[in-house]
Length: 138
Length: 286
Image 1 (cartoon, rainbow over the protein chains, first blue to last red):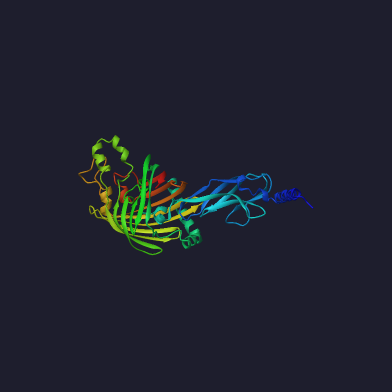
Image 2 (cartoon, chains in turn blue, red):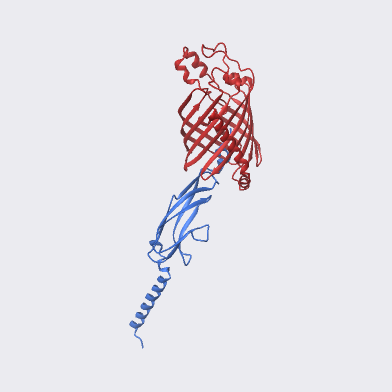
């Protein structure tokens, strides 16, 4: 018969093994607090509301040293770029949108979002000024 | 002559570009991005500009102030055009108050109740310093040219192309009628917005005399008496670009060429039969 102490030691060993296995799969890096994502500029400005805004975005991020990660544009299912651990910490991407766009760092295996950054679209002339503000012939 | 040809070539090229991209225009119409303004609201712009005005024998580089805006409420509208965007030869800018009488998805018919305009820019303003009779010449060059009109404005929106016809009569002093037909085109290229406008402006003989004529009583040694003896049609072309620098700041560059009818260009207060104007401004948009 096993003693109570032996049983709890066994549970401890199993938990350690489970942790190591999960780490190997990359999921142990799913700690949001150790990941960050920033984008510059985080605001894109077009002249007239409804117009498509164009920019070039510079992403910078921090991710744990192990695990595989990808940067996603919320409008696309395919990742913009993927990397392992901290082998990569920046990326440049052309931007074109008429709506706010959220970018996310996710685990390559799994949908868990570790960090995100929003690019907001702004317009100088809002829609209620539509044809008067765009430019007029007078 | 070279500058004149270059400018006209650019303006014509801008308008040909409109027809070359007609598919884009249709798509924009369907998405509702372009068309008649149905909403209430408006904007106001305040800024500074540096403008170059070139005549046949002289050019002026001047700083200026940009004041422009528009507000619309239930069909009533107010529009103010920046001095820097005003046609240098006269009455086509200013402040407008009006009411939209009728509209559909493509056309609007507006009643213009007030259409005030400011002083002419003739290219002779700086001559006063060297004048043998400065007081008399200043009285002519800086005289009131306020044109308080009432009339009708018809505007048609065709994708990125706008057509506008306007007929205004002076209700303040009975100084004749003006009328204009204008065709404009705008196009977004990345975050830049480019536009081109060509115009034909009709000015009645009375209005021409009001602005460019010199009576015997007014005449001086250099600015002799002059009668505008016919109505005139003046042509102009404009190209420009606007860039949103920040959420409330825009940069705008506008080049305009105006060709005056001989009946106005021969006036002693007018320096030449053509005027170039190039304005660069930075404005804050409220």
